[in-house]
Every structure is written in structure tokens, then in C-alpha cells.
Length: 244
Ligand code: 4H4
Image (cartoon, rainbow, N blue to C red; front, side):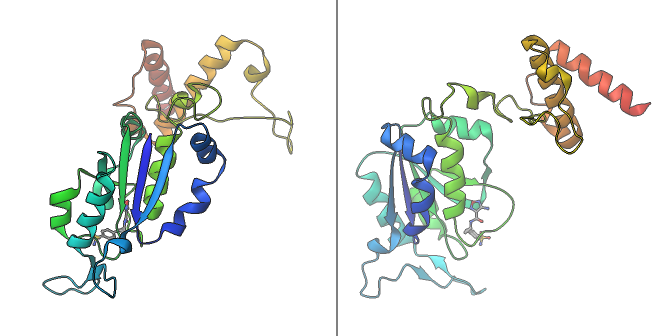
């Protein structure tokens, strides 16, 4: 997969894109990542990339001509799905990350200031994606979140094949509790089923814990989750117990 990032702050990507998972993905040839500085596409002598909004209101916007020129230059190297990171986008979910992981090339446009001139969006943006309903100072952190969530789903990037597809949210549920050594920590033990050696019982317990935690913390996820009849029976038991 190729991912290009268009940004005014290319240095922001260095540390994260050189850390273990990303570095291994790049070394394995599973990820080709490149950063491009939007300012390189400003043609005036002051390399101006922003300007004040028509109609007033303060703040600055990314100029359409500079941004479209930058996007078209990067796309000239190969077609890509052009994504603007912005609060106006549809919110990133596991399912959306999984869809993006199937793509051969993504071009991530990192907004700055108060946003982007609408004509650049109309002419050159394919999709707007938000990482959540809050406003950041720039789209770079959002782009890094999206890259992390997508790249880890590329087959071969993470060790245990397929493990990431059993992650929290992968099946529409939150994950339940996890435990590791020591067996007793400050008087707190480990659920006996986890040391029983009964793998089927462990799987059942983990599924029930995931259902319980999802019901308690994010009940709205249950409507879209793929639930078995056994899952539904367990949830009914939970609801009955809670109303006692
Ligand atoms: C864009 C800030 C638009 C404000 C921006 C506006 C996010 C997010 C984000 C820098 C850019 C901000 N990007 N998910 N959340 N004027 N980006 O906040 O439309 O409010 O991805 S505005």
C-alpha cells in the first residue's frame, strides 16, 4: 500500500512513521509512505499558502490553488483516493479503516488553520474523514491516527496473522478485560477460567466479557454487531440480572 501525506509540517510524521510497526511494514515492502510539503507548491516569492476568509470572521484558510496544485502533483505519480482530514468528515471506525486498508494508494491531506477553501474540496478531495467530534490545530495528528488504524490491518504487518482482525471493534464489540503475570497482584487474582486450560471455556468467557463491557459502556454498538443466538441469550441474562 502507498500512503502519501500532504502537510505544512512534514517533520511531524518522522517519529511515528519510523517506529517499530510502521518501520517493519515499510521494510517488508508492505507500506510505501512519503510526506510532501504543501508549501513547496506555492508559486509566489513569499510561498504563501493561506489567506483570510471572504466574508471576514477571522482565522485563515488554505488557498485552493496551492492545495489543488499539490494534490495534482502527487496524484500524477499514480492515482490515489484523496482524503481530507477534517471535523466535517465521516468519523473513522474499524470498518472504515478496514475498507481503506483494501486500497492500493491513499493521499492524506492535512488541513490547517480554520480549514480549506471549499473549491479545493470540490475539485480535488474524494472523501472527508474525521477522527472525532473535536477540533485539532491541524490534520497531521488525525492523519497519523488513520495511518496507524489502517496499516495494522494490512496482512503481514502485525505478527500473529489475523490477530488484529479479532481486535476490539473488529466484530463490533469492545474487548473484555485482559490479564498477565503475576497471578496475584496486590491481592487481586486472575479469573480461574483463564488458567483452566479449557480453551473453549476461555473463548466463551472472553466473548461474554466483551458483550458485558459493550452493553455497559457502548450499548449502541450492539445493534450493528454480529450476535449469535448464544450471545443474545447471554445479553438477556445480563439485562434480567441488572433489573433484579
Ligand atoms: C479543519 C480545523 C476545519 C477546523 C480544521 C476546521 C480533524 C478532526 C481536525 C485542523 C483542521 C483540524 N481532522 N479529524 N477532528 N473551521 N482538523 O480537527 O471547519 O471548524 O480530522 S473548521
